Structures are given as structure tokens and as C-alpha cells.
Image 1 (spheres, rainbow, N blue to C red):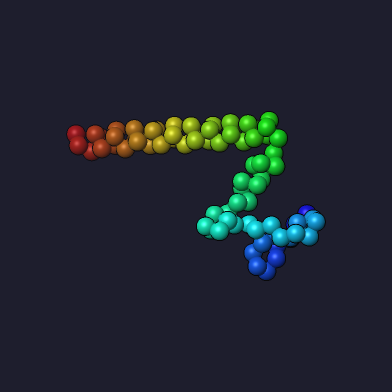
Image 2: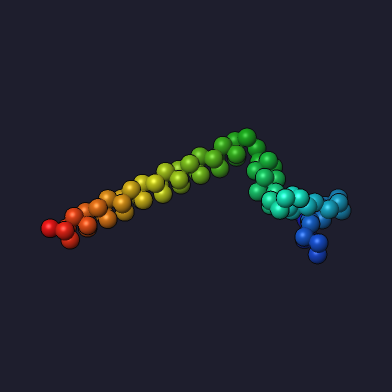
Length: 76
């Protein structure tokens, strides 16, 4: 298990410091997390992400249609 050091880096189980951000300020924690998963687990994460994006698109299109119909109703 790792713990957060006051410098913002993590101390791993072997005692070495693991930086949680790259030199350009990018947080590498999600990258390390996904690379620690098995290929099957990575695929499941990707499938869930795609499914969520498709649901959001569907909801947005429904709201866009509602706005069109409500505008037409107020015009007439």
C-alpha cells in the first residue's frame, strides 16, 4: 500500500517515491491504475465508458428535440 508524502509523491510498499504527476503537471495516477488492470478489466472499463457516452448522447438528443418542439409550440 502507498501513502502520500508531503511533497505530493507517493511512497510505495518498497519505500521508493512514486510521483503522482509528470513534470508537465499531468496526473499519472489514472494511467498507472489502468495499466495495473488485466486486459479483460481494461476492456470492461472501455465498454462501460463507451456505453456511458452513448447514453449521454441519447439524452442530449432527446433534450434537443424537446427544445425544438417547445419552440415550435410557442411560435404557433
